[in-house]
Image 1 (cartoon, helix red, strand yellow):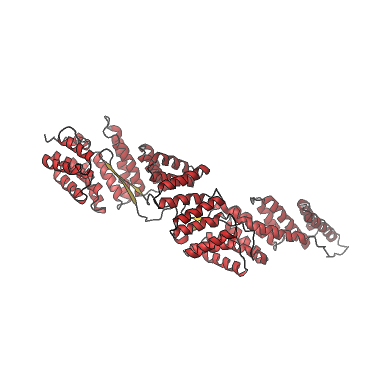
Image 2 (cartoon, one colour):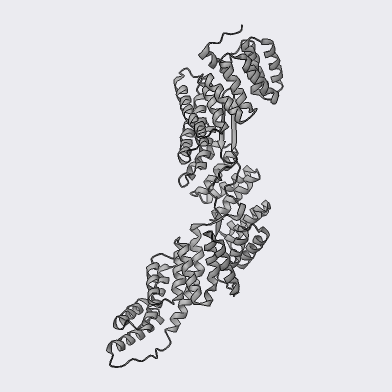
Length: 597
């Protein structure tokens, strides 16, 4: 059975479209370290360039805003069946009743009048006469089936192209008058599906298909709904019943593709989606999933072409726009990703998903202020830990540390875990460090104290989170709490051996306590690990100088010149007494280290 009218295909999208995070995913650390910005680490729960979906395993979910499309075919089935029932009312009623039974005679007359009215599309008149006929004789079977047909016709009219839910009670009553009304079951299923009740829709589609073999076309629709509900075996059974009836529709081909996709049978899935797209012109969903399979097969350029075809079929098909950006992000082509998503955002400026991915692309391009604008637009609809994490990071990198902290606190409210608390501390630490050399030290110390509070909580929540220990150690150093800094930074290094940024901060803590021996030993170890570690070389040279060993300081300065001439010049000025290092000034304010000259 090859059916041409099959525009009732619903689209599936990846369940993780909204930045779903799998537990235990590898953390992505972003280090910031300089003389002017201090040392801190931001933590992303996933790779900064990771896609917003997860193709592995063929995880799929029905897009609720596409349910109406899936109901159109069932509406076609219902209308066809309803026309058959109305045509049947034109056949003469040859039943006879005894003339002495006045109510039965009156009921029969009213029924014939109703039949004529229904055949002439006077639906309300037909309903009124059928009701009167049943009032006169409740056992009048033709009046019962006629009223059921008339009410189905009225429901189809009320439902309209958008399947208005006002038709539901009318169809439910129609079924009470005639439990064999296959048209009513099919239409009720269509209206329920269009209004976000797919499970109930499938139940009614099943009843329609059981009543009339022509309704086998609905089995694929049922299968798609079952698959979306995670009922794979039932979906496979529905496809088998569809095949047994020799049904060949866009839906049956699409369902076959989805099942293969779910089973990671990529070649077969691709063939099925291509056949579905061949069956129906401008079949956006089939082209979208063709792109999904090609993407998963690593055929990125072909995937992008399929997504572009999807948008040609349906310019408002948001997932395709996002997937184009995703492919480019995965390929490391952030410029192309941003361009594709900016184009999509122009067409759909209110679409939060597009704004979210656009923010991600702009963030990777280090266009942080623009990324913040995109995240703000996305936040009108989306409220996830990743959105607020990415937004807070972008605001911080744009220098708006106060707002960065506020957004990161929202992330911590959504997910009160060590990572989120560490990131809040990161924002407050940087906010305080940015003004640490101001004449009035009060505001800086207040911000650093807030950082400390959040970071203490972070290490309490997660004793394995090295980033939190590093940030807390840096904060203790900035506050002059060097004993605490050393203890915490040693914990960080126990979690991540030979971590240069932690070793540098540990050296700073030792220097703050005037323990130049351990400061120098720690920093020497850092530059042995990485002889081009510029900040480690600088602090090692400055520590030698502060300890009174000017000769070794000069040797380090010469080595630093090969790595970072700017820092080397600064160290030279410190050694020559023309400059007191900002970090050293901070230490001197607290412990008054005597100058070695």
